[in-house]
Amino acid sequence: MPETTATTSDGGTAAGASSRRGTTGATIELENLTKRYPGSAQPAVDNVSMEIGAGETVVFVGPSGCGKSTTLKMINRLIEPSGGRIRINGEDVTDMDPVKLRRQVGYAIQSSGLFPHLTVAQNIALVPRMVGWSKARIRARVEEMLDLVGLDPGEFHGRYPRGLSGGQQQRVGVARALAADPPVLLMDEPFGAVDPITRDHLQDELIRLQHELHKTIVFVTHDFDEAIKVGDRIAVLREQSHIAQFDTPEAILTNPADDFVSGFVGAGAALKRLNLTRVRDVEITDYPTVTIDDPLQDIFDRLRSAGGNEILLLDKRGRPYKWLRRGDLMRAKGSLARAGALVHDTVTRDATLRDALEAVLTDNAGRVAVTGRRGEYTGVVDMETLMNSVHELLEADRLDALEHQHDLAETRSGRTHTEQEGFTGTGGANA
Image 1 (spheres, one colour):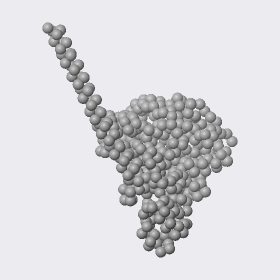
Image 2 (tube, one colour):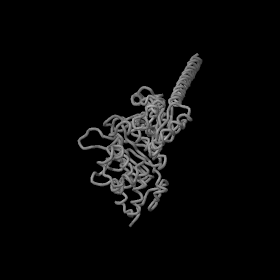
Image 3 (cartoon, one colour):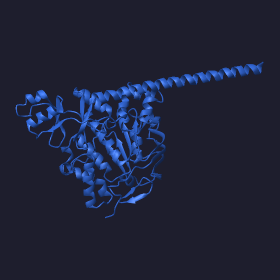
Image 4 (cartoon, one colour):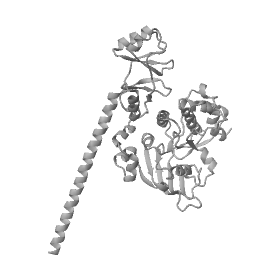
């Protein structure tokens, strides 16, 4: 069977690009992109121009109805532009066959959009099958994609969407969007329909995937905190997708362009900057652990040798299960079934410090377990570490504010001095 041709990051093509090597991201250029609907006095999207770098995650954020989803859908021409050009890796795709274009651009939407009558494997295999991949290659790619998004291929391969949780459906949706190894991934509020905890974990998963894959991602959300967390750059959009500010999250937080952007930033900019630092950037400490299969006496001995008052119980897969205190063990009476407190919240290394802080405060015990891609225990982050990071951010903001005030004062002083010189010079001429 013929192999698909994938666009490479240097603008060329590679027949049957190896899934191990993968196709990296592509540049995207929007030039005067416009959408007018019949009968509307104003365009829905008006002359939008921007450049997105290969491997970059760019987030569109703005009020409802501002045209951010319309702009996104014009990139793969789910909505046809009324005017302007779209270039991917320098190639003008405005006149390309739209079906061919969509097969080269991954697309993930809210509520996953999975076909309910197809299994997980069949959903993921859709585009590779359409572009002519061999059965063996499709089979290998499905397993690779499930593993990539943290789902056990043996467990999920033959299941149907109705048997999955909302978070699992979204993971499969992302796997399907990436299955044919596209250089570009478009995501239209992909995590908007799941609960907040699942949403945080899906955001972490996307960040981890992007570290591995380096795709070009264009992501639409109405949640500014989500934009800060996942975006390399954020485009804050006004009505008709007019760009109010297009910059890094840190630049927007510390120097919003105007009152409109400031409204999106909202109060507590310093705390929002906790979304810019990842758990992997701070100290992750080890913690005494035991497994659910360990004899009770061994657990007692481990807790005694650790010298603390608490130990973390792991399940048979090495995942955090319960926090056990010394008193819990005393009351266990030979069984751990009712002993200890269940671990409700965990974070990954790609979680933000804000996620970790919220988990610590929710648990009210001063620490949160850190897990790997399959939920396995890797360490702990404690409240002291998080608070030190908060204090460092607040101090940095205080110093930045002082420096900004100093620069303003110098600017005003220089302006006044110039005006005085001008006045004196004019007076001398008149004299």
